Image 1 (spheres, one colour):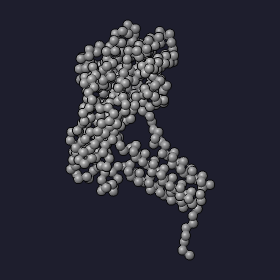
Image 2 (tube, rainbow over the protein chains, first blue to last red):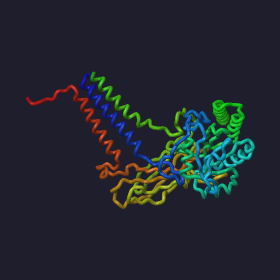
Image 3 (cartoon, one colour):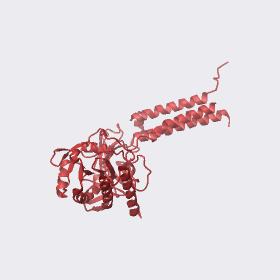
Image 4 (cartoon, chains in turn green, orange):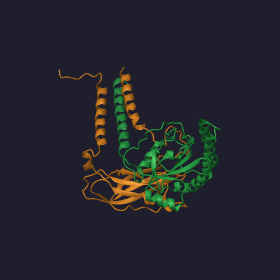
Length: 235
Length: 197
């Protein structure tokens, strides 16, 4: 190949690369520049604010790792009566913080499990707190209908901001955060929680609270246990 | 030497295009080896496209296996000025009964809806619609309602293409001009200008 042919080939390559890059760039920007709506949500990115993060923390090795905080972040949301309720109200207890919405079928399916978990573990310093990311009226009706007897906090954009503090800045529901009694985040479970998963995580949290295992071991035990459950279910 | 220059130029262009495909990953993709248990990002679970077909705007979703869209959550509204749309014609879905949510009509695999439209500006503006939809994964995860502004394919008629209707089109044209300029420089390198004697 002579020099001129080489230059023509190079020029053609340059043009093709530019056209390809331009097309990619254009296609990335133009079609569907929308976003997810959550009832009551307003424009503007939630503030992930405080809370040190540990990228590697997750309950499920198969699940993408959200940027989960190492410790329970501070936040406050209104309760069913509309009173601002800081999460530190449950300081000293292990928490099962369940993010949900009334329009979400798997969230609804979880409610009976969460109710029984709340009653079964109440005497062992483990409390269930629901965070409804939804319209207040809908949550009140739903809570009444389903006789939810564990504490509920409600919010729209403010609840989304709290979800972002747990690394769920593009949330899907349900997801559930488990902490130990010192406020360390032990696990974040995305998707519908079932009895075997809840029992596994809570038994490890209890061992952690009793000093039987340390936090890294607890996280590993949960990850391995969930993977085993998943494998059994698939098998 | 010249070959090295060409390789460097091509390499630089490839590098410039790389960040467009990378970007910050959302929470469902961060640092994870994907496997069958991963939940999909909503734009992958529900692939949306729209095109014009006579007096109808056809909006189509390709729905990933194990995911579904709620029929009653689909809404289409006009986004461009002077566009009027009627209620979408939704095909029959599949009835799904959930003990805690009741019976809902859902779509799986793929669905196409038709939206009758009229334009009262005779094509002065490109057609844009705002589509809202909501769906879930069978494995137990629901995405909040998603709203997207869509430009149905073939909505821009030749008369309208004389002016860029979107800022990115202007940038694409500028990039094209620069590409040809760069190619011209590559070709010209080492050539002498033939001047009249």
